Length: 461
Ligand code: GLC
Image 1 (cartoon, helix red, strand yellow):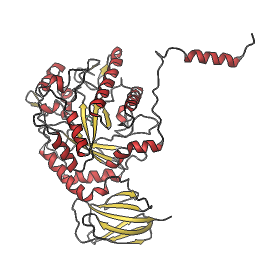
Image 2: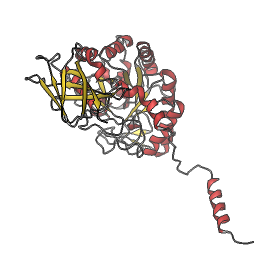
Image 3: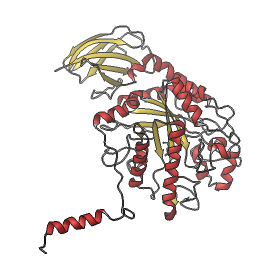
Image 4: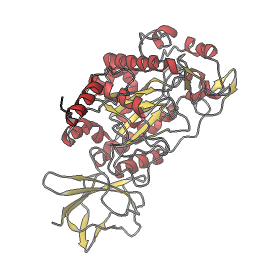
């Protein structure tokens, strides 16, 4: 028989392709999506701009204290910080009876603050689930006196009151027997028994499916992705699994390794899996151009409730953080840590109410806006919208009200059409001078924290 190299090569390729897939590393394929499809999927989230993070679990019962002693560090990490054995930690679940939990009130508080979505911990690093999981007894239904799912009622309330319901899920798990403590002193970062890793991956996937089926979250917000045993390929597997179950789902970058070594910042979409970056406790100075992102932040120093943490940020700081984040094109996810009884601390409620008062007057300068196109805004911040007729609508958030009543907006070529104060709709006189726009403001700032002027500009062709 004649030797035909191409036939030979083809046969080898064919034989390799027909080998059983076991043992061959499969690279899960991210569902393909056109830019338009992606925009449609991300649309509500991009427009929302402001959401509530809720850290709640059996650590909230401890409130930062173990055996009568205050434990340093953030509240939800107490199992790790006080190095509490799994069996002893279970005593917290036995006391978790949130009789004052009022999901309608929680959603009302978020909604009145101007928040458009809620992200709540379904399972934090301690492994305890706030929903009814069939694959563990370490959940609120089986291990607490409360005995009922905590997430479903909140999900229902969110939908009733028009907010988007989303869930946080920790990949690292200090309770699951497949993982074990990183050292004698700490759980974090966990290690895994290699022969049990598959079992844990399936456990996670089952729980995530349970979550989708029971309360249908619109975002899955992963965390605890940093232990070395968890890889980018694992992240892709989880991401693909979830998007196949629910194509419209939005998933943060911590599903994979995208923030490792990046101080919480995302890299390009091609390299790492996930739909948005998650800078933590910071608002990146220039935003994260080209990617969707959301800054998550605490109001005091802890995510989970800590009775002795009184280091609250002022309402002024928080309002300006909402503005600052929007001006850089991101979302702001602001945390509350309810008590073990189920109440949101008064200090948080008061601050949220103050943010809400500002948002009711000025919300149109936040929702659905984009990053500032201006090179510098020494007087405050700017957000922008493009109107259907091509008008560039700028929202000037003035933090420092000019004493001489003259506000200069630099670096904007274009013809100003009109300007008005959002506070009362009154017109503001405006004129162009080369690359600057000059506004004549009333003597007194309508709002000492941030007064917003809406400025419409006809951009130069
Ligand atoms: C960190 C912490 C965690 C918290 C999260 C919020 O990763 O480990 O406790 O839930 O930040 O972004």
